[in-house]
Length: 109
Image 1 (cartoon, rainbow, N blue to C red):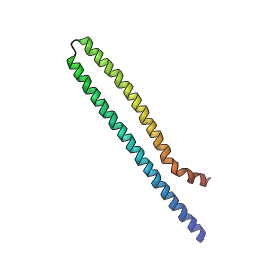
Image 2: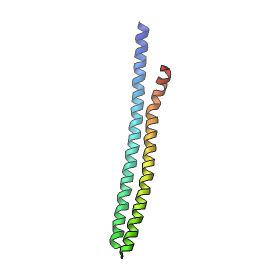
Image 3: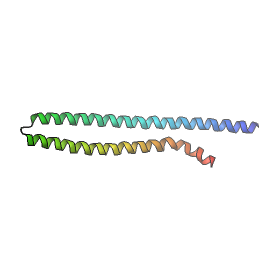
């Protein structure tokens, strides 16, 4: 009976330590995602502002359409690249958060 309690206590402490490690990984990953999203937002705003300035200085309708078309193309490409990057960060976050639990799952099998 005493051995069972000691084992239970040991596994409880191990699980708590593992949970803290996983939480640390989650915090680190969430911070990386937030930083990346903030940088993308800043770049997007700067690009949009520069495009508006170009549009105001356009001398013809054709030039304005060209500026707008270029902006739309660049914005789409930047969005796809950023979505891919953030998706990769989320995948890495999930792997890192699960990693501390791998040893516990292996012991349970």
